[in-house]
Image (tube, rainbow, N blue to C red; front, top):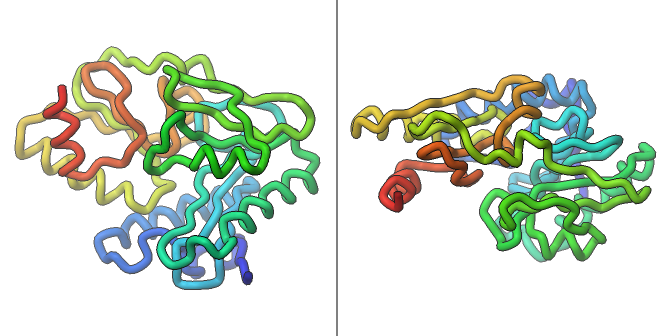
Length: 248
């Protein structure tokens, strides 16, 4: 298993595992590179298989992680993704173990990750994480869960703001970051649909750590509100947006 960890010297040139060949996502890939080039200076880790596949883990010190989660001396896992023919070959286990080894070597208090009671797209698989000792340490709405592997008995938690799950604005509102290369295309589809169908839309870019820590909802680079209520962290394309609006 040959893995590569991105650093300031290779982040702008090394192959990224997300959105590999789809041309419509190349703008997002470039945005991701630019975002990563700043984050790796802060201890953000993007570790990938040395192959043309979606096999990687991405994590950061919780204090520098763009999520409304708080805790002392933890690592936060944004994403652990093994796709297609690479599944079932031990890559997920190896990448997660590398994160655990990093945490121990750095004297961290533990590792945490966003998950859910029932499996949801774009969130870590709870059953897989629990095999490695992760436990539920906090919940919101009996649906979204914060899992943690504590190495010293301490536990992270969602921020008080994240528990609100409501905003004053009633229009479709989306908070988004530039960490995921799929986001720019999603934003384009949503904007065009709302423009063509007279759907009021408010797009809010989360472009600083402070904004991310103060968000009024669950967030892992994307969050959707409608009629003032939090709906999902699932990335929306035009089809999924139609379903959401029709269900209300």
